[in-house]
Length: 381
Image (spheres, helix red, strand yellow):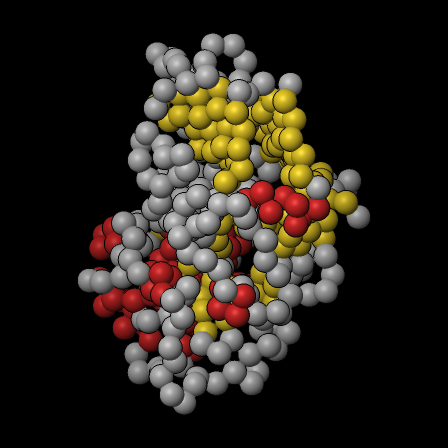
């Protein structure tokens, strides 16, 4: 069994740092404003893979596993992996700089085993709750959006920004000129007009043009938060999704729902194989990134059978515009991009789930039992 271990966050990411992504990062523009709480939570996430080869497929097996981003609200402290693979490499060689572990087995016959352990620290990112925007004002002169932020205004195959998307955005914001208030109007429109559809597979595809064109305003987190992102971009507000996974129990939103926002047992153990969750954020000139999550408003509303005008839904909606409780970790912001090495199936929609191919045939990453993988997170207190 081959084993690699990277101690402390700096060491883990220095390996990734050897790769130069097309989009370089600038602290003042790319990183969130320092507005996270001082109290850190500590999680160990263990991912166990025993890949199952689809009937009729054989040959080389490639697996891409997303690795968390380091930000002011989360840190990857330790990453280790072991298995019977022939090759395992950390890289961020893609246009988003999305970090991933690439693993190869040369032959699909026999066991295909991998174990990945990540030690992660998180702290709540609470911009509005901590009143960080109290003194923010729209710059008197037209704000220049930095080059590192410009990509978050552009369309992708799944994030349309013209046609019905632009028309909808303009209807929502009306004559409002403040980007912060525009973002709030868009957030509230999405959280109140869209609904969570449990029949959707995984987190959804987030095809915004199709969602708004058909008027079928349902889906799961990627669908709902991608609509928020696309509407923001269409209104001239940089915005992006962050794809990740819930790690444990909610503390701050537990009074509103025991099911919607993450849970764990009395020992802090959470089975999270199906816990993937997409969130969103938008950018303000002179401040930086601000968190949002209208999708979780719709999830809570469905789980608790509440209406939009209920005090509980209003309270959750207020919290999730401008704040994230970090019983969750984000992997990356990648959307409609090529993996490294490139997958034979072409660009991926996003990398919130692991992705694998057997001689070019993709495995069903939405179904942990079929893939197969098992994720467990333990919170250290």
